[in-house]
Image (cartoon, rainbow, N blue to C red; front, side, top):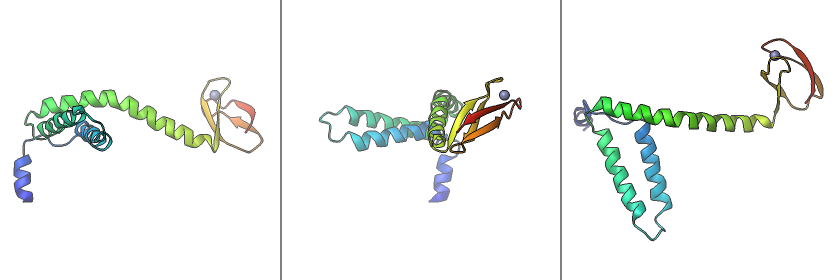
Length: 131
Ligand SMILES: [Zn+2]
């Protein structure tokens, strides 16, 4: 069975990030829309599943690869922004953020230490802040 699958997939494109995204979209539509009284989500999902299988079993690997690269170019900035926001929100609880007065470098210091002298890690300027 596994050997058969390997032979079948040989020279075919397989899964990539774009297909993963399409599958997630498919699942979201499948889970959130059954209570809607129209067929548009159903048709959309049918199109999605055809597209997913078409891309997975495609032998035109360079074209599928190019599609995925286009997708990543759009998606990566969104993902990075999202990750940054989560990280920043988590850190806000325990840290305060200051800008160095001379070089504008962002400096992260632990909260609740009272009056402290911060040394900029980039230009070594010292400045006083309350945390
Ligand atoms: Zn500095």
